Length: 430
Image (cartoon, rainbow, N blue to C red; front, side, top):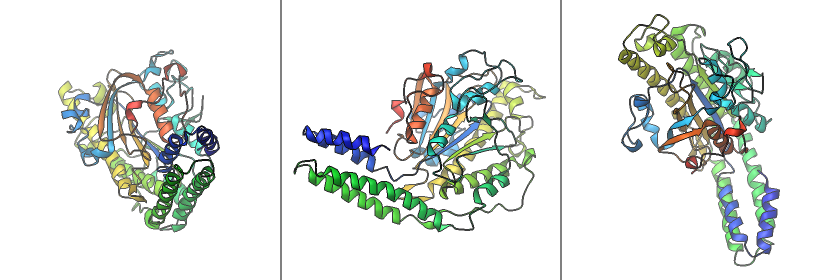
């Protein structure tokens, strides 16, 4: 946030008798400046079944896959028609691994075989974590259930591999937290208050440069900032609560995946509420066997009719819909937990977050990287327009990454492959 530049612009406008438009710009910024924004990316493999993913009826009726998310529809944005265009660049992509790297970097990895594949750029979650710096104790978390593929990277040749154990993640996040920790919420209030104090000081300085007609508008905005201060005081300190984990289970056992996923989601929600970190990625393994859904065969084998799976296409697609529905349940579980945590001003932790469900491919069997499906939850402090579905016509997913960076408060002109960047996606902005 660069108030110095904004103030110069404001003063120039005042000198020209045009202060009001600039005042409105600052007022719009002031309404969201107190929000601490978080980013969560839920990455899943082996594509989807688009006919069951895409909402019917103008987006008002969710199909079988997204049905678990229906209660939060007003705070969701369902997307398709986005292409991972960077995957079409040399070297020619193979199978799945390059797409894990492409998901958040927007840049095709180097190498032509599994043995020499190497990530070629920083991922958007790490770009944001770097910008946040020391704002939180833990810059970012990379988590996974069963599998260990990397979707995050610090830069070229620097993949970040996820932590599979929710117990290890718990220990890292809550080593310094005992029960409810009101000091964490006090620190959050202090951080937000410092921003409001800065805005108040800037507006008072500006009042000397505007005419009598505009000064009442400045006074009204100062009143709105004082209201934000009161709202910050209403945030319950009990928001930061260390979750309970129960009896430990093996973290490398297939049939424990549902419990491990829930434990991870509990850690993520509490880590956000306690401001231990503001950036998390979560990967789900592509070769688990979903016995808990009554299905035998690996997720990857079902999508490819391989690895011992031999079933008619309609049967396999039905199984894939069940698996995708289960993923939607996990995404809903976290989003709903965040929706129930109040942050002041009538906003919830979900309102101040960007939760993105991203697929590695749109069709796992054909390794399709066009017409990609995404689900976005939370407005990220008012940035995203929600309660809609957006069908795009081949926009590069680099632009979605640009939108996420801008929503988190760190806009950047290019991300990943610069040739594919045309700017944040306007249709997603509120």
